[in-house]
Length: 340
Length: 277
Image: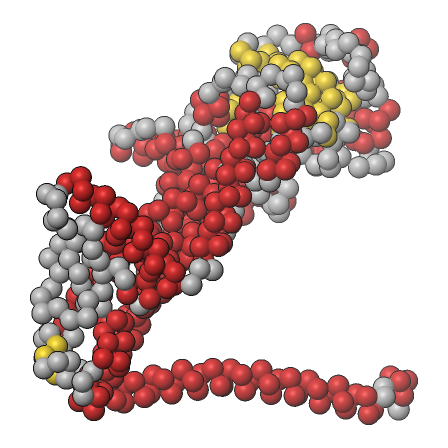
């Protein structure tokens, strides 16, 4: 036996190996548990909901006091809502992230301030004051974004009601409509979409900034050294290279927004509409809200239950398709950029 | 070029008046740097640099890491502008015009003064699009002309024969040496007068390095080249003039042969003979 073996305390060694095995077991079981929960949810919903899905279910409005018919208006309403929300949230979020990452100074406001102070009497020092102001604005915007992400979604709903409907909507009505006429000052697609856009914004901003950070600085330098302006560099080099990450973030935000019910409770979702929304000022039905209504407001629970499972199944499939689209777009963009 | 090194004053003391006796003998100055001081925040990185770069020759900047040679190179096309807290004081005249002027259009300057970086940094685009990039941002729309300039630039960078059949392939598929020559072609496409090279061969194998050096030798017929290098042999092989930097000061600047054979400063001799570095 060698010296190595003599120095190895066998009991101690055994207990080390045992703790290693226990830890591995714990990790494996937590993974299995997570998968199990997901499979149970998907399994139950699919088993009880998939059978409900028929052409009639997808193409008809609800009937007989929510105990029959389909969910067509809710599908259309959800799609319209998500589309409007995307149009509002993605450009604003991407623009904010570009400003934060590409245009605000890398140094914090404190350092920028001390440089401005130290530059006393020097030529061109007002650029340093501008840097300080810009750095301070970045801090304010970043903390606003972080706080926005932590706000409960029902608060967004109340905010949407108070700000968009009562303040902006009523204001628009006063200016554009005859007295007593209400067009904008009530719950509608546009206000619900804007409320959801606010909720989605932090996700889009954070993901976009993260994506911009992955573009190597030497790419920006190469472009600038060829005489490109900052904006040309962003548009032609930084944006294309960070597109997969931006898309991922946008789609994550959109999927989250698509499933949220609380923000649209007060801002435009309707209990039941026999017709489809025609204008952005119309109310709309929504799959998530429909699930809530079916499970709490039905006059006949047994008759509604199959419809409820069918609706949940459709909502899951739509979310899944949305995520799948995101993954595919990302994979294609990555493949196009590959080789570097 | 006749040089009388005995008359060249030492630049070791930053506060000494900055005579440029040696430099004045250059008949064709392309870049004329006078009393350049450079700061990163409070750190004084370059001390009173005065040096003249002759047209259509290769000027090498040598010195130990952190001596400021790369910083100096990047002041010539104002690439330090993007570094927060960076500040340059002094005159950098290119063709007689001070480019270290806050009001100067850096976009225009950088089209005249091209740059090749230490790590090759092609864009994740095709070979063709990499070279065409500078033309496109310059507003060239004519397809035939673009193709013509791309080919000419790739030929000048000695890369054409290796890539002419796969111009639409991704630049990432090229070898390290080819990527660096692609970056040189990309810089040449916008037709600069000056080419700055920041250790362009330091990440390459000896054969790729040799190709880059041969290329530099050919390019000096048409371009004024300033190259930073850590490789003494490289500086001796490719350059006409050599500047030795140390701790942010220009220790000695003369024609390359003098720097390597009969340097005036002891420090220069120690460095080029490898006694420290």
